[in-house]
Length: 137
Ligand code: CMP
Image (spheres, protein in one colour):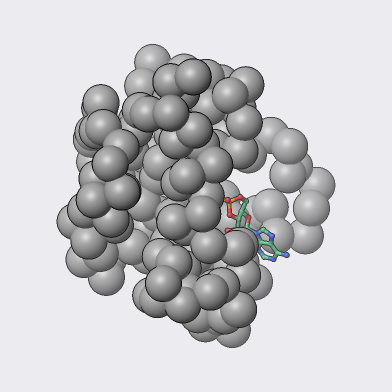
């Protein structure tokens, strides 16, 4: 069935001028861009977005990183877009993400406390609807 997913190009992707390339890959796979904007997140938005990671060692560095510059937020639509985008993004750790994926082609470990891994994609229909509410209220 047709799903929606929240895609974020994180600050590292924006700084490195990869936003267009990343969005182009999602469109080229055939998904529909439904909403798009460039925004600087607030701490409150990030606390809501990353609530499940609160208390983990990478939580504070992650929030600080996400506050370090603007992000590009998009809603993409299509059949199985949640799974489809996660396949395009590759695994969380960009060092070992498969070549051909966004993280595998453009990312690596920069020796910091957080994985700067270029993109976020919702992991389920429930998270997608929750996250879309946070970024496109
Ligand atoms: P994201 O898909 O946005 O969800 C949580 C984020 O936390 C993840 O991408 C990474 O940026 C970061 N992250 C997850 N696991 C780790 C880890 N073990 N060490 C550092 N950062 C992590």
